[in-house]
Length: 370
Ligand code: ADP
Ligand code: MG
Image (cartoon, rainbow, N blue to C red; front, side):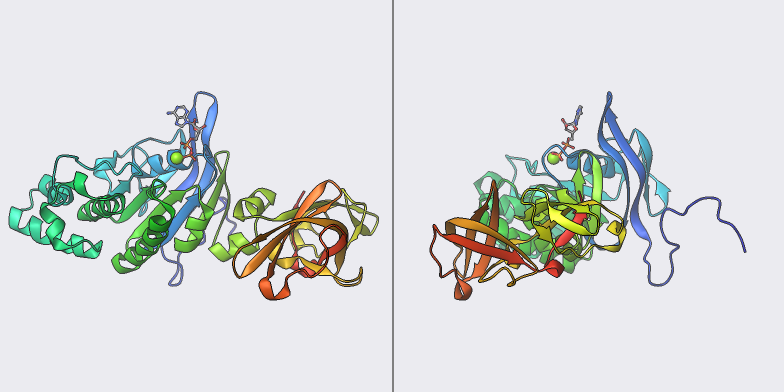
């Protein structure tokens, strides 16, 4: 038997494991003492739609700038198909970045904007136009937009022009830095779906950053969650939603109820209420004596008796919000507020100012480190 001296950074490639198109190993970026990106290792696969989400200031743009070649890492390595590219400038990489600001040439036509990358490559005019018209169709703009001044286009149309221009570079990898954040809600929702379609149709690798998890959930094959320069979890949307790695991720994923719990002897109890809790611990927390119990609003319900669920608390309802087919209730238990979400059919039938019992079953809670 041979002993491995160095821990491999990723599993050995075989027929089922495609080679990563981009690979980050221990990547750090510091500004003075401050680490904007802190020790990130990540494999990005050919053709995937990977989204990096995180609150403002978590280091998303800095990470993307390093991937796009606008910034070099202070430490660590970035490889593109096995070739080290730490210091290769953006114009020498087969990648293209689409900004929120779009950076279109304002006094030029839609056609001139889209053809710019082709002009730089000395593609003859007739061929350029043919490709530009093809790209217009791809981003679902009418062909007669070819001669239109780009400043006369609406926000969503400019977005499409910027996309068409990015595709004109024919990059292997497209980067997007919050490209939809300036659009109104309805247009944003429509563009999310179009981007996802465009990703499928083009077969390119998309690396997208946003502070909106909702946006990430709609479009991505995988999501990476960043906090304070670190990548705290990478997984499918389903992984991130159902098995958040820690309390930060669970709270980032949406409105959740979090109950701090401590184990005394063989029993778990809620720190804030002293109530005994039934808890199903994941294997990695088997020995923990403190934990956060995360319960999504849709997994909590009103019960008639303390035996109505594994865990029951007594509180008072102080508000309800209609979400159309569902209703949300805010219930105060001591100092804490719980959020319950029920279908209209199972709406609360009791009185608002009387005590109400709320509960959840142990298997419906997510237990993360305290
Ligand atoms: P995000 O895109 O997630 O909002 P950024 O990558 O833009 O975050 O920034 C992460 C942190 O790094 C922020 O605290 C920001 O102020 C800091 N930062 C980014 N670029 C620079 C720079 N050139 N010099 C100093 N600090 C920077
Ligand atoms: Mg940013």
